[in-house]
Amino acid sequence: MSRLPLADEIGLALSTLADSATGALNPTLRLGVTGLSRSGKTVFITALVHSLLTGSGLYGFAPSTEARLIGAQLVEHPDATIPRFAYEQHIATLTGRPSQWPESTRRISQLRIRLKFTSDRITRKFGGPATLNLDIVDYPGEWLLDLPLLDKSFAQWSAEALARAEAHGSEARPFLDVLAATNPAADARDTDAELLAQRFTDYLRAAREDGRALSSLPPGRFLLPGDLEGSPALTFAPLPSGSHGRNSLYARLESRYEAYKQRIVRPFLRDHFLRLDRQVVLVDVLRALNAGPDAVRDLETALSEVLTAFRQGEINPLNRLVSRRIDRILFAATKADLLHNSSHDRLEAILNRLVASATRRARFAGAQTRSLAIAAIRATREGTIREGGDTLPTIVGTPEAGQRLDGTTYDGKTEIALFPGDLPVDAESALQQRQALNFLRFTPPEATRRSAGGEPVFAHIRLDRALDYLIGDWMR
Ligand SMILES: Nc1nc2c(ncn2[C@@H]2O[C@H](COP(=O)(O)OP(=O)(O)OP(=O)(O)O)[C@@H](O)[C@H]2O)c(=O)[nH]1
Ligand SMILES: [Mg+2]
View 1 (cartoon, rainbow, N blue to C red):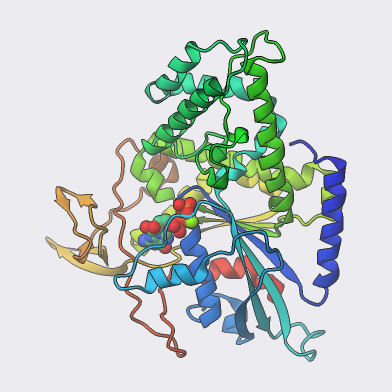
View 2 (cartoon, rainbow, N blue to C red; view 1 turned 180 degrees about the horizontal axis):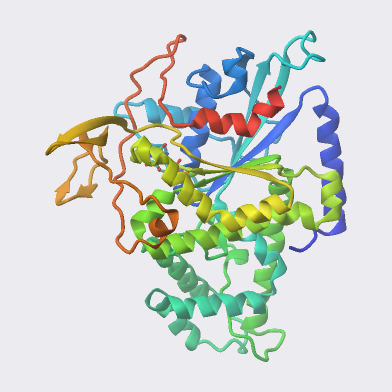
């Protein structure tokens, strides 16, 4: 991956030094939470913050079990230019009547939570409570898929993108047809650029929506444009290379591609990614298994591409000296509550298999990694049913309106117990499985349990362990 220009490097170095100067008194840990669209980022962060604020359900989080966690509080984030993670709004949605899942989010956002605790280090034990600022940054995994573009010229990226479009066939056809009728060497006209970009974006969207390609098609902002919708930096498309003049359509799109890299991708790298200390990558393995082997393969490619980003620190020697560096990565398979706990080990094994090459890279770059099957908020509970002479493990919950199983369409109000099926014992055969599995989506639970402070309590699976791995050692 390419280096930052020197001015950027120095700027980053200075700001990192400034961070660590104030950091001696109030250490700040920056935790990145990422994952492809709908992987569970918003629910994960909301549940994590909620359990820290209410001190509930944290049995596997050492500072809590050792009674060293004194309290947690949301505080103003020093960076006033980044949207705040809408924690209160998400909690209100989840605890409303009826309770609902939070809305899909499309932008980066962050939140600072200040944790007070007693250190168990002998050197600090008598020095009064310690403080840790935990900055949680929620950003789309699709943005990570853009980082490899920094190393690619327009010609290289175009060649790859066009080859992929040809292979995708029908979804790409309208784009390829417009492209065939376009002369890249002709004088540039905005209307041509807009039409090409529009068809190209439609194709990326279609490729994702049919469930086969979950992800691996940059540029990421074409699918999640946010405020940039319609701006020139997002109005380009791949073109076949050939001879062309300075005023040609080719030259125009090439310069927009470069603008996309410089104005969108690089600032994300510099201002966000390179400042993280820890990273959690959420993976919706079950959705990929639902969609079948093509989606699984696509997810695997996307994950290893996402993870090339984590080599950044290794490649850039100046960064290694002065900037923070991600030293722990947690891979979490989300929504484990859609399975009975007897299948959780298998889910972890499949996740391990999916992130194997990514893990090797990350470890090579000096980061520790771990994989966990989690549910940030359990939408189901476990039970058993008797069928014939057998007792089958079940999950009990309310499928979302419109979910279908064996010819029944659910209304979003009826609770059912179902045997969700087992994942295959062997991860490899789960990934090769021809027949798609069918995991239903469930409505969020009504939060009926209350903490000592009267706050709603959500059940979860291993959210506390995830937290312990991600921040526990900073609270020793
Ligand atoms: N059963 C169950 N479903 C979950 C859980 N977490 C998330 N979901 C489901 O997954 C959906 C997406 O979760 P979000 O947290 O919004 O995912 P996201 O990654 O923030 O999605 P975008 O903002 O669209 O990128 C939710 O609407 C729920 O249907 C969980 O712990 N258990
Ligand atoms: Mg979200």
